[in-house]
Image (cartoon, rainbow, N blue to C red):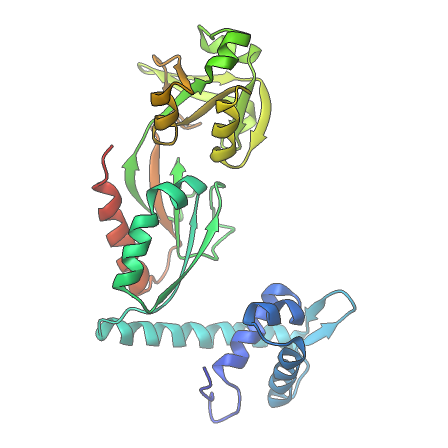
Length: 308
């Protein structure tokens, strides 16, 4: 982008680079993202400072910090780029040519099992849209809004987020036959405190939550291992390390082959607040771009048509 702003030589490109430097807190790091030489990035920032007739950064040997003028410029730059993005988005929507960046947050399971076929087809349908995917099993909240769409499972984490419940699912307890031969099969929830449990960080304070009838039961478990991703937990359980709680879809093949055995199936695994499990499509509040609206609509329809 090389458009001049307000008759000056300040371009959208310079403002974009300036925002990248602020985010990375380093000109060199920003240059790597932009795939340009650090010296060129430094000259561009110098050009922006010269055009504004002010110093935007205080530089130290380790890090750069915004000056007072830099803070003012940052707010202005974000506003200019946001208005430009809205304008181009609206024009693209009018012309039926969606374009721009879609920043996605999803778990490893969703990114590798649930959505690849959809993303490939969506990209072919809208070739001017570019994607970035952050793999994260963490629940996104109000403090992290640097994404357009998050696809996450469990409870709705933050009531200020916009959310579409797109798929209900179940979790089961399971372990490998080798583990059960070594440690025995638990016959009650209370027995889990004596077993080796491989837990996900969504298990709050070392508790798994279950429901039987109308009763919600919070059961403390022995956490042998703790992870922020379900995929290593499943792999370790298959090798006999311990008991896991995982979605039926993610362990279906291992259960069918006999690598894993389901346990205590009379209890329903639920969220920590007792609510049933669901996959949510989440996005921050405020204005939603045409490409994001289209992505949400088409992904929702796609996932709801998948077999249970």
